[in-house]
Amino acid sequence: MAGLYVHFPFCKQACHYCNFHFSTQLKKAPDFPILLEEELESRYTFLEAAPLESIYFGGGSPSLMNPSDIQRLIQKAKELLGTIPQVEITIELNPDDVTIPYLEGLQQAGINRVSLGIQSFWESDLQLMNRAHNREQALTALSQCKEHFDNVSVDLIYGMPGSSLRKWQENLEVLASFEVPHLAAYALTVEPNTALAHQVKKDQIELLPEEEVAQQYEWLVDDMTKQGFVNYEFSNFGQPGSFSVNNSNYWKRKPYLGIGPGAHSYDGRLHRNWNVSNNVLYQKGIASGQLANTSEILTQKDVFNETIMTGLRTRWGVNRVAIQEQFGAVYARHLETQVEEHLIQKNLFWDGDTLLVSRQARFLTDGIAADLFLVNFDS
Ligand code: SF4
Image 1: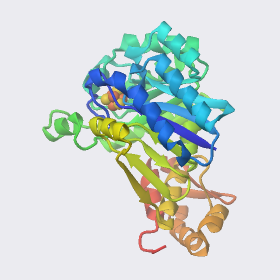
Image 2 (image 1 turned 30 degrees about the horizontal axis):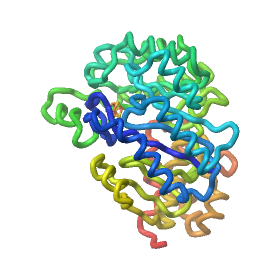
Image 3 (image 1 turned 180 degrees about the horizontal axis):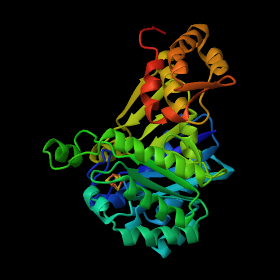
């Protein structure tokens, strides 16, 4: 089974931390739904493993799309690839785009899961991030989403400059009062070529010390666990039955097709490709039938390393039997050797044949995974 990702590359304004592909030239936005449809028609055969288990509208700000355009894309995907009966169809929403008529339009279009980009309930954080919404809009949008959809996810950001554990706890308390079934919480990271990177370089913003960021993450995991959420991926928390199918499939390395500028696709084996991250070139490429798209053929070593990285970030871990079957004895032995030190340090542990990161080492997951990578073996 497979997934479809649709990238809508426009935003009302640039959030200071964001390095996703988007443009604020909104006058071009109405041209894009039809371009996306044309790309889907020309590239859907990339997926051999249809039907679709999930369709995901991300961006950018897909909540700038009309529900009728979203509906047409969903219908086209169903026609070309088919969907399983319980297909998950998600859209990312910015709180300032949410209205009751819009949510009703999304329901009619076939959307059954919404992911609301709140990021913080604190006005000061929202202003610092240059978000287009304020606290009031976040609260209103969240209660409206809850009224219209059972499957609601919220995005929050921790480790904000000038924040404190208490401020972060209050964000989580406000969220808890809405009883949403899913949360994605990310640490604020400074990406190159963003306004935030510039502000940090100019000493206009002081980042929170790493220990305080880790403390906020620790609180998050404990608090969400107490509320009955499963921390099924490093940054993702779901009530049982409410894990994101789209995200889970990505971590399980299932095939997906990404359409839109900058969107990535993966065939589930060794082939990954991505579209040009430029709206003008994308539009020209679709018009001429020659969309600029870069391909990469992964080596076994790449796939092994990615399997370790994504596996350790999830509750499904890394299974040594599957490693042996997929990659062979040399890789399996490498894994057994590399984990030893981390087993002694109690950063990792075996649950049967599954390698998992211990609770104490969760915040160190990426570094631990890198220690297990194969770096000097030609496959
Ligand atoms: S709305 Fe989302 S995609 Fe757009 S700039 Fe902000 S974080 Fe980036």
